[in-house]
Image 1: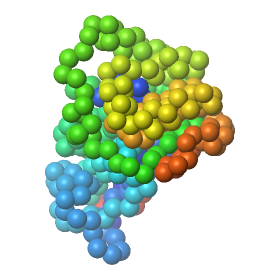
Image 2: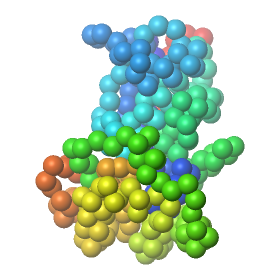
Image 3: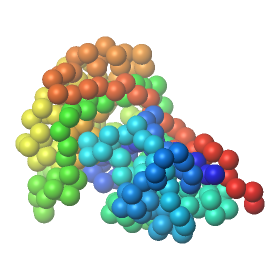
Length: 275
């Protein structure tokens, strides 16, 4: 039996639209044998398993809520593809890149799938994936409301064109963000996580999420952003302060998770077949 797990993720990190992602210590596990019925063949993990050459059923266990902005489908697809490759005799390290390729093709973009495959914070472009050595010791506080958001419908709210001022603004913020992550200069993060490309348009339809971002920063978060297409919000804070920050966020119809950055990415939980 092969059992592979992949972490959840928070994408964009504010200005890094479709480019930046961070892996979270919240997991989806895919196995080639399990108790009870297997997952439906339409499940993202099952589709990725088949696309990567897997044969048969898969079983899925997950801690990641769907349609909230925590990379549920990206983690499931990465784990499903990796399970197929490992079951077929590929070493897990060698399986990361092809598993990501399968998942990104199914996702349509790699900003969620890349951190699920590699862990940590990842820059993902069409042709290059670069893990960043993060110098921050941080808690990641996730504010997760009960309502769901469709990524497809959320993208329809975004403008087809942007102004030069907004483009320059975001280029500058991404540069600040990468600098802060690499150097550990957390004082940069309040400015570095600002965005003009997608958040203002999405937050018009998610006023509770906008309020959670403001409340997180006011309560001492280094920076906060809409996680993926939302409605969840992610906030970075000093290690050990996450519980206090979580208590300052709106509690009606929402829950908070105090997590760590996952630096491992794909991991083999079960024993692979003899090769």
